Amino acid sequence: MANLKELRNRIVSIGSTMQITSAMKMVSAAKLKKAQDGITQMRPYANKLKDILSNVSATLDNSENAYAEERPVKNVLLIIVSSNRGLCGGFNSSVVKLTKSILAEYAKKSVNVQVKAVGKKGFDAFKKSEQFHSEYNEIWNDLSFENSAKIAEEAMEGFLNGTWDRVEVVYNHFKNAAIQVPTREQFLPVVPTVTEAGSKGDYIYEPSKEEILSDLIPTSLKIQVFKALLDSNASEHGARMTAMHKATDNAKELRDQLNLDYNKARQAAITNEILEIVGGAEALNG
Image (cartoon, rainbow, N blue to C red; front, side, top):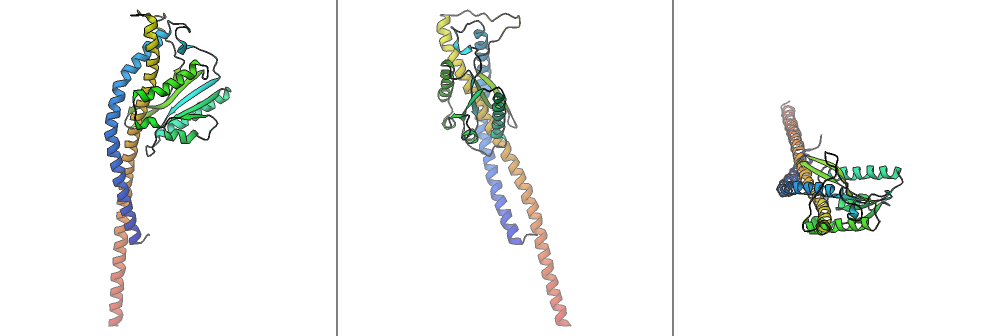
């Protein structure tokens, strides 16, 4: 059994760690509220706009919507969304694991895949890989639609000029504070949808079809990327809050166990001292 000084030092150290994890939990909880409100408000709008885009794409040919052009998949861009910081449980590792499974899937088909990392943890995981293309870690310093649009524009430009035949986004979908679902979404080409009746959606355009589509399609695609980033941001804070909550509970259990060991060791030391005193007194009397 460790001596009393070692036990005291460990108890103090664990107490300090518990204070840190508890503070991090409270900070993440405060940030989660804002992030959760952001994705909750954005998701219905983004999903509806995506549905409209998919339905409109079903009524257009490639000359009207180049973003829906289907072609043989030879080059793929994966945009993986992670965080810049750790201490958030399996948040980052789940995205990295899903990305690696996608890379293995495409490798079997002899498809060239490049990875664009949004977030330092994704960058660290793939920076030495042959598939690494580029990184964009600054987005988390100022998460906004304008900054996220740069990521979307790069992917859209690459798709239009033929650099990429498909673009996919890999991120954590926010379900609640305790559950984040690793998600893979096709960003480009836009997948047309068909109505329940089996016919393509029909729309009336005003002022003109060309004017609306020239603005609607790129904006809708940029919003899809922004939604994925908001989803990942809320997921990160939820994962970190949960991880710090568990860490605080574990630290408390360990501290309680060490306090028990310390009390036992102190009691044993006192008992030994009493026995030594009694033994010495008996020796003197004898």
